[in-house]
Amino acid sequence: MKKKEITNKLKSINLDFEYIITFDSALVMLGIKKECDYIFLSCNKTDIKNFDNIVFINNNYDINNIVKIHNFNVANENILLKMYADDKNTLKLIYNYIESKDNHHYENLLNNKGYNLIAGTDEAGRGPLCGPVVAAAVILPKGYTLEGLTDSKKLTEKQREKFFEIIKKDAISYSISVIDNKKIDEINILEASRLAMNEAVNTLHIQPDFVITDAMDLHKSQSLGIIKGDAKSITIAAASVLAKVTRDHIMDEYDKIYPKYEFAKHKGYPTKRHLEIINKYGILDIYRTSYKPVRDLLERQNNENLQK
Image 1 (cartoon, one colour):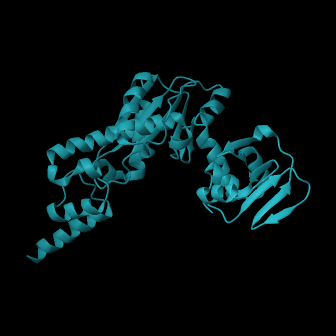
Image 2 (cartoon, rainbow, N blue to C red):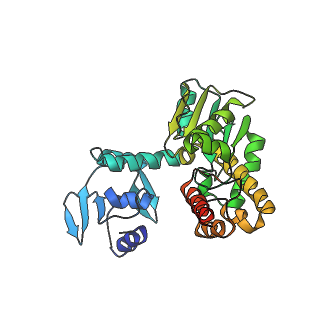
C-alpha cells in the first residue's frame, strides 16, 4: 500500500482510542519506504484485535517519539530502529533517512572530535560523453544552514543558480577544478574524478583539517567517503552545486560554439537525442573517445572510410 492508500484506509476506520501507526506503514508515512503490504497500528488497549489486515497491538511509547502526519500518530525513527533491530536492510533504510534529515550529522560528529575546518568535495560530469569532469571543494562556517540546499541533482536549475551565488559568498573558502576530456581518456573517469576532487581541495586558500566526499576515497588520511553524501551533508551538497553549475556553464558555452549539438539541453549526457546528433554530425574534439558510444561510432566511421 502506498502513502495515500494508507491514509485513506485509516480515515475509513472509526477509532475511539489512542493509536500509533508502526512497522512498515510508519516507514511509508515517514517516506522511508514507498509502499508496504499491510497497515499496522499499535493502541493502548490491552486486547488484540484484527480488522482486515489491520493489527492492533499493545505497546508503551514515549510520546516524544511520535510524530503527527495527516492527523495520525506515527512511530518515529527511534521506535522503528528498535522494532527492526534484527532487520539489517530496513535498518539501513532508517539510518539513511535519519542522516538525510539532518544534513549536519557528519559535520557535528567531526566538530565534536575537534575538527573545525571541514571541506566537502563532489564532482559533476562522470556520465557525459563529452566535456570535462568538474569538482568543487568548499568549507562552510560552523553550523551553517541554507534552507533547501541538498544534492544538486534534486534541485531545479533555478535553485542551483541561486545557491551557487550564495555558497560562493558565504563560504570560508571554495575552489573548483576542471579536468578535460583528454585527461579523462588518459587515466579513466574514476581517476579523473579523484584528481579533480584532490585538486579542488589542495587549491583551497584555507586548508581544511578534514575532508568529506560523496563516496570517493581521496587517499588522504584525514578524509571520509560518505555514500550519498551529497544528500546527507550540507558541505558536500554545497560542493555538488558549485561543481554542477560550473560544468553546466561550460556546456552552455560549448552550445554557443557548436549550436547543432544542442549541448545546452543535454549537457553532454547520452540522451537519445544526443546520440542521434553525433550519428548525424560526427564526433568533436571535446568528446571522450574512451566512452563506448563514442568509441563505437569512431570505429564504425573508420571502417566505412577503409571500405571506400
